[in-house]
Amino acid sequence: MTYIITLGLIGLFMLGIPIAMSLGLTGLIAFFIEQGSRMNIPMIAQRMMYGINNFVLLAVPLFILSARLMNTSGVTTRLFNFATTIVGFLPGGLGHANCVGSLIFAGMSGAAVADAAGLGQVEIKAMDEAGYDHSFSVAVTAASSTIGPIFPPSIPMVIYGLVGGVSVGRLFLGGVVPGVLMTAALMAMVWLYAEKRGYPKTPFPTFRQIVKACVDAFLPLMTPAILLGGIWTGWFTPTEAAAVAVAYALILGTIIYHELGLRDVVQVFADSARDTAALGFIVAAASFYGWLLMRTGAPTAMAEGMLEFSRNPLVLLLIINLFLLVVGCFFETIVALLILGPILLEVTSKVGIDPVHFGVIMVLNLMIGLLTPPFGVVLFVMVQVGNMSFEEVVKATWPFIIPLLVVLFMITLWPPLVTWLPNLVMS
Figure 1 (cartoon, rainbow, N blue to C red):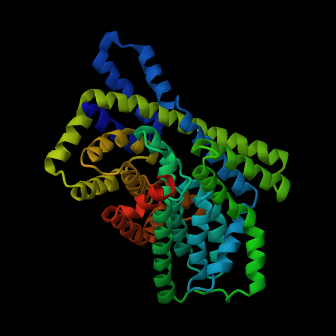
Figure 2 (figure 1 turned 180 degrees about the vertical axis):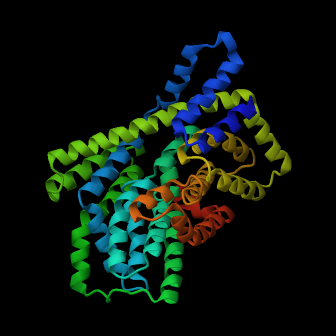
Figure 3 (figure 1 turned 60 degrees about the horizontal axis):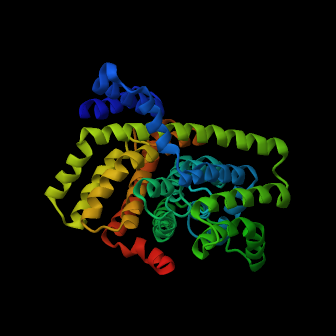
């Protein structure tokens, strides 16, 4: 049964079957083999509904909607212009602006794909026009998009909090320092490329230019402050923060900037509903699949095997890091969190690893997986946005995985990089 569930799923992935269908078909076949003619059909529907019947999950479609509203209302252009003003004078200036812009946009969307597809178009166009190598522009955009699910708010953090029973507010705060470190590490990589290839930089901004950029981007820049401040002060929960983000994005686009008409709003809501339905199907199918996997006893055996190998927290985290880096090459982030999250949390909790610390580590591992073949989702997005072949995108992007691995290693070795801020704010 374990072989059917695991190898069957990987086989369907390799055949190009959509993720939700692969999960559902594998689970259905395994359930039929186990139950035979006594198969309890209503049980399938019940397990799928159980997976999506959770208040915390409401944050996911709302963050998807807020990101689309921000992209459509011209907020992304203002953010990139602001980032260019404050860091564009560094060697390879627009590359640095790309990284800083992704950090700022991360405080609004919480999704790597939203960053790559929305802000990425603005960034790549500006860098191409300034004389940067197209492959470099695409690579920086792809790598910087992974900051989004680490820096709060974060859709994967919401999913992890759901499956692990961990405070989403603490997870959001735990991603702040790692998100800043990722930005700094990627900017260091950009600097090296700029020095080697002689990329241009913008003139040092005048005081008037700085003031203008700050005024233009002030309201979008307030989004992360409003969301984190509201969660910190207890004005609203992380789920309610997602609704606040949607309301704020609507106000900016329709009333403040007048760039969202009725037709635009209807289209954004329709697109977000479509994405939410697809994601909901994945969550439901993964819930059924994970339930069957637990029935095989394989997760318990896997956890016991890890604990028998070592009970040293650092050794276990290094082993899990290697495992998740491989998993990220093949599994979609949400699926990996739903299926592997409870298993690995069982292991880490028994050796005293903070669940918030482990949550950030797990999400960062899976974000690196978005940049690795054969199933890195961001790579496929950049093929479309950057108009390059898949092989070219992979070749250009892989060096930027190195600074992300450095940050992963840092937060693994030194937990306070993750836990300090949540403990300070929410103690």
